[in-house]
Structures are given as structure tokens and as C-alpha cells.
Image 1 (cartoon, rainbow, N blue to C red):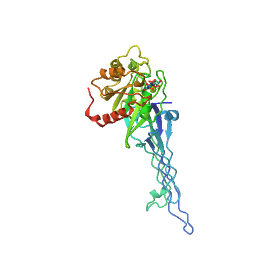
Image 2 (image 1 turned 135 degrees about the horizontal axis):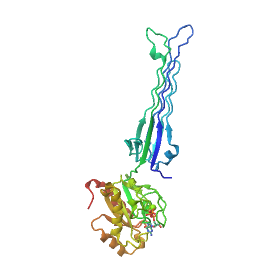
Image 3 (image 1 turned 90 degrees about the vertical axis):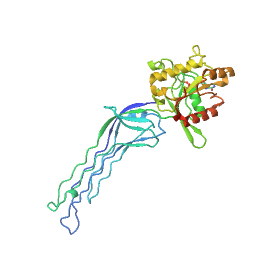
Image 4 (image 1 turned 60 degrees about the horizontal axis):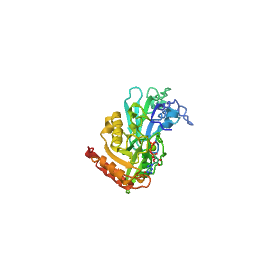
Length: 340
Ligand SMILES: Nc1nc2c(ncn2[C@@H]2O[C@H](COP(=O)(O)OP(=O)(O)OP(=O)(O)O)[C@@H](O)[C@H]2O)c(=O)[nH]1
Ligand SMILES: [Mg+2]
């Protein structure tokens, strides 16, 4: 199951109580105080983990509590610290206060940690209260309580490239040609029901994260098809890669045949969703070139004289290496602004 929004409650651990105790040693009738402090309560800590793709596990559990600190011991021993509660979330998780919507944290990198709530401090044992006038204090302090928070977690995936296209255009097949990801592929619209991520390797060092999202249709911003609820997952990409079916045998067979119109329809949906998407660098890829005449490829290229374009076949791999190179080049000059 894919979940990209979830509400949870977290609670840090209570501090352990300090204790009252006195030394009891042979031949020393009245030993001094030796009650240790309570241990600290455990913290609530978030950690981003790139192996995770969804917030679904958190939706099942909903309540997360760190361990309480243990009480102090005799012989001035501090109680054991409560265990932290480590909450693992996918990279790209934004943590907000549920009531105010204030952003508390945004975990954008693998391994990034956020200490959200500290556990309560342990209470003092009676050793702390000894003084010249009171050598045998019988007081100690309770541990401080833990803290609570109600949180709203929202996942906005982090990827370099986002694949956008009509249903059945060939986005998922292209993702599997570019990366080791193996998303479901099917010859029908809306095979992909939730976003997939893949990592494209280039050379020895370069790694590019690519997001494949469910197909978009005209009127998606009004809720048609699967709507636009997954577009947030490409908001943080650098490049939007439009995937256009050169054979146009998808659900848009009758209307298109004009690739430019396909692009404009998609672009319009993105812009209706958010101005952020309109600002991104774009790359327009015609796919399935293995099943069309070369004239179709020429037509495609001629319809976008003013864009970065490429034709490929994700099925045979034709053009895929060139596409990888193009993606890397575009990422390298991403700061120079978007071509018009
Ligand atoms: N011949 C050929 N078929 C392809 C190519 N790429 C994709 N297909 C086929 O096109 C159909 C749709 O492919 P998908 O990758 O599932 O398309 P999608 O855009 O992810 O579709 P949705 O997830 O439904 O939006 C499948 O039958 C694929 O096998 C290609 O390069 N050549
Ligand atoms: Mg798909």
C-alpha cells in the first residue's frame, strides 16, 4: 500500500524518579545518603531511510512512544536511560504540527535525523539534597514527564527527474529501461497507481533519481482520472520528462496524432496544479519508436523545434543511452534556467 499522508501521535519518555537511600556498611552505623538520580526518558527521533517508499507503516501504528527512564539506584547509581523511539520515514517526508501546520522538519537526505521531542529529565536522588544541616535527607524528586505531539506527515518524494505522460504512454517501461526499478507495466491505462522511484547509474559515480507517477489526463486538475494528487511527488524534481507515445495507441488515439497538442494538454495540467512545475526544465521524449515509421519520429521532432527532445524505444533500448546522457547534461546545467 502506498500512503503519502498520515497523522500520528508521538510521546517522549518520562524521566525516571530519583530515590531515597542510605549507605549501609559494616561497622558504619549511619551511612550518608546514596540515592541515585532517575534516568532520562527516551527521545522521539525521525530518520530518513531511502529504502522506504511510503508512510503506510506509520498509518497502521499511529501512536509512538519512547521508553521511560528507570528510577535511580542505591550507591548513587543513575537509573538507565529510556530507549529512544526511532521513527523511520522515506526521504522527502515533511513533518508538521497538526494543529498549526507549522513545518517542524523536512527530511530530504538519506540518513538525516531529526530529534523531535526530548525525553523528560530524571529526578534527583536524595544525595543531591544533603547539606551540613541535613545530612540525612529523605527527599528525592520525581522524573519530568515526557512530551506529546500530534503530527501530520506528508511525503513529497525527492527525485532529479519526474516522468509525466498520458496513461499507457510508456513511462514505467522507460523507468525500467533507465534504472533497475521494475514497476508494473501493462497495455492498459492506469497500470501505475502510485509513484515509483528508480536510480539511474551514469558512469561510475553519477546517480540520478527518477520518479514515475500515474498517468495524467485532460481535466486531471478537476479530478479526472487519478487526478493530480501525485503531482506533489514531482514538485521537487529538477527536470520534468514528458513521455509521449509516438504510436499514439493509448486512450488519446483519436484526439492526438498531434504530439504538440499532447504536450500542451499535459503542460496545462501541471501548470493548473502549481506554478512551481511551470518553472522546471523540460525534456520531451517520444517513445515506442520501434513500432512506428521513421517519418513519425521526424514529425515529432519537427513539432518541438524549440525544446530539448529525443526519440527512444524503451522496449529495444534504442536511444536510451543518449537519453541518459541528455538527462545528465541537463542536470548539470540546471541552474542556467529553462529553455523557452
Ligand atoms: N513496442 C513498445 N512498446 C512499449 C514501449 N514502451 C512501453 N510499451 C508498451 O506500452 C504499454 C504501456 O506501457 P507502460 O510502461 O505501462 O505505460 P505507462 O505510461 O507507465 O502507463 P500507466 O502507468 O498506465 O500510466 C505496455 O504494453 C508496454 O509494453 C516501447 O518502447 N516499445
Ligand atoms: Mg506506469
